[in-house]
Length: 331
Ligand SMILES: [Zn+2]
Ligand SMILES: [Zn+2]
Figure 1 (cartoon, rainbow, N blue to C red):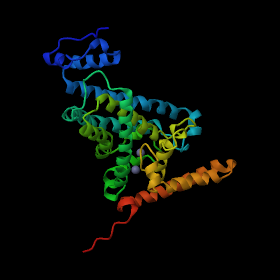
Figure 2 (figure 1 turned 180 degrees about the vertical axis):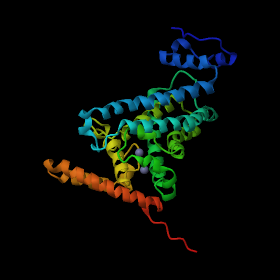
Figure 3 (figure 1 turned 30 degrees about the vertical axis):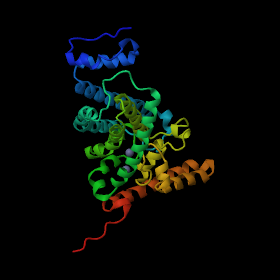
Figure 4 (figure 1 turned 90 degrees about the vertical axis):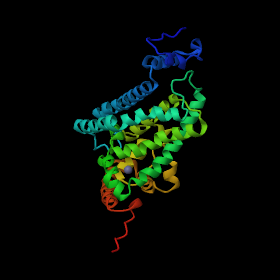
């Protein structure tokens, strides 16, 4: 099968693909090649594809959660069932998210292609890498991002950083899908480094990375972030099958309790460093209760946890790392 190549094309555009056996490419690889040929400018082609992908995936993934929030049937799996976001909440959140996508993320996405090229990342090249190679590289990015986020997120709970940056993300003590990227632009930049830094470092050292792998990773990372803010823990949620996967159950608690559970994708760092003790104590009390009392106890525990969370937030605003008070100023 021959690829349909759009024209007019520059000499350079053709030059990119002179070594490619078009007949050996699958339809996706041909579409990829045609996209780059059509734009005839790799920076534009990558930038526009990246931005569209991010918007489509972000809002596309949020949509089912908006519908679920509107249907009372799903309330039985809502982690904080009394706190369902209103249409106004969702709209306010969408506005800020869109604003930051266009002002903060767009320039970063645009800069990505030149940086990627400087590190020899493959962009327009076809054929694509084998799925096995993509899978192990994505796994490395997951582990890297989780560790980066674990440290950076705790730093964001440090008084001055919390007051000026992370407080915006904690506006919702019961988060919902759209709130995943509801954050100060500086936070988007800081925590985004964990997402993009992994691929860039990996590429720097190995010189063996295709941007399609980076896209696949970002799609999965967006799913992870949105789902963990969804506020729902279903019997079929991933954390029920993969015990070290965080999921909404883990991150919802962070928003409610303000402390504990700083990781993104996995649970092991919070477990190793003991930053999930409060979360486990909460779960243990629920488990120990008789089934008939569980709902009432959960309601009581939630109110108590949120109250303590508000107190912890006040303390964090005026304090140092991990809630330790800043020493009084000496004159
Ligand atoms: Zn936080
Ligand atoms: Zn969050």
